[in-house]
Length: 208
Length: 264
Image (cartoon, rainbow over all chains, first blue to last red; front, side):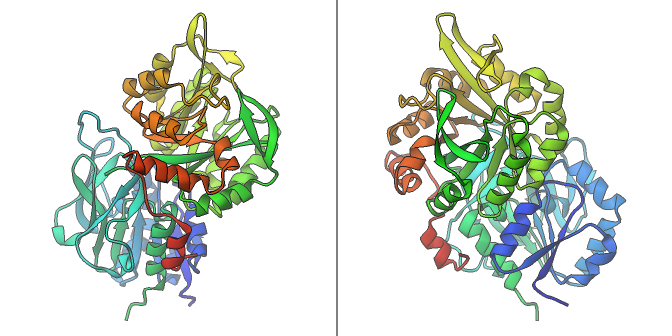
């Protein structure tokens, strides 16, 4: 098994090429995986995604991908969700109705509150505050700017799941990590050096 | 705190980077767009917009190829626009590595396409490009590379664009484009206060103070094209100027940091 090969789950949502490009830049090979049967062949899995929550979770369930990812999770495979991928790992989302997510993290996905002057979507570079140390964020400066594009945000029920926060109309979860499940709200593949370092940390992490 | 963005715009005609002056594209700046990107990546630009201004629809394939080449080198957000007239081509640009679609004429000719794209990919993916032009009769929005008058005033146009599903407005002025007199500030200001989506200011930057003025007019991001090609280390200098003027900008992203973090 080639540990440098990383499954990038393709379930019909968004720009996957950027993730592959970024993985290539940090010395790994991203492989688009759309067949749930082949998920078990990988030691690391990235769940990317841009778009609507409901369509995404419907696709994952319909394709049998939700189940395959659940098995990988139970086998301790490090799973990294990016943007919508992170939100899918949560229990519920309030985007266009109420929808069940994969339920791996006790968290709800809610819209940014309506506030005067608070433009939604939250688009652009904003800084992180770290809540604890973790291999994913090793070697980063204390408050790095990273690129966000989202209208909904993750609210974790258990504060110990929160690895980094960001402030936009109030604090929200920018990165969560619980055992082998990790989620990033911003786009590391679009956050230049900082984002590439996070992906490099993920790629190079060797579970004992 | 959310930073104000500095955006580099590449105007492409038949695959070559050209200079734009009042929507006329004459001088070729780079014959290969990737050379321009290599510079921007090193120089801390926050985002890249690449626009196909060719008058020939046959340029679409070649443009998608350029988007693909650029996306493999650029680890900041990439917006692509020009000739987006159907779902298939929009999908092709996104698969080529674009993160957002910059749409202009379809807001007049095919609003259903805009709605469909916004639903399919999310509104954060849709950037409404609007070009304004002033004369005795007032200020109006033009489409189709500035050739057709919509008869609409900029504020109403921007609001309708947001309603149709745009997540950002890319504001340009045909009179100011390449004309070295700064952004069209009074109209920019009206548009910024009329919509609750972020506005990107473009068109006319001649000195770094113009960028600061754009931010003060209410823009969430400031964009320029020509000036970045003709000034050494231009985006870095622009950032420094903005920071010194009190504008919150992203400080990381330098080539040095790439090396420090050993990701280059």
